[in-house]
Image (cartoon, rainbow, N blue to C red; front, side, top):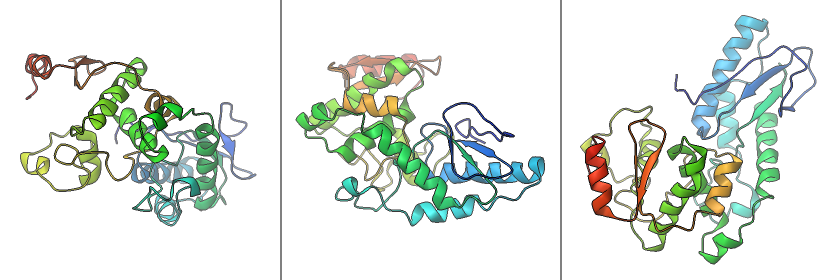
Length: 266
């Protein structure tokens, strides 16, 4: 299972930031890691469901399939619906820890996630985004890409700067994570040449602008980075051999040189 699928089942009286979904004799906890897609969240629910049966000897109403169905039937918050052409809930299910009981329905957990998103979103100052003519939904979509592209917290605003700078000059974003999302390519499997030419609207190498929806559910730090990217001229970045940090530059020549040095194709 992907490292992003981080979860936990606990006994009771749990500490942390989890929010109780229902009073129940047996209290369970699920943790959604930042950046998970709705489908990956449903996978996490499935794992927790199985653990609850095996370890706690309870069978929760909440299953991966029921969570996925409830998510598909849930509309985005009203303020975003004009921009959400695909009627997708992706991006709005806030990643955090949540408590639930055996009788908790999937719609209750989803409501908690939407409420948690609304609470965090209210904290954002979107004035800089408005000045760049980026809509709130655009900020959320950028945040989802920042979440997928970064490991080091200090690089969130740098990646956001690259995305926003490319958007400003109508240069394709060329972010592999969007193509992986659109085609359902998991893990770090190399993307094939045929996949790179795929006409999915999530192929940001051949289609300018943002993908049609967020590609995951970002945490607050990535939302902040998307709303306030670094004021730097970077247009390129390439991951360093440590797998954590990136080399950033405004020069295509420097980018290609570093990419070759690190063993990538330019």
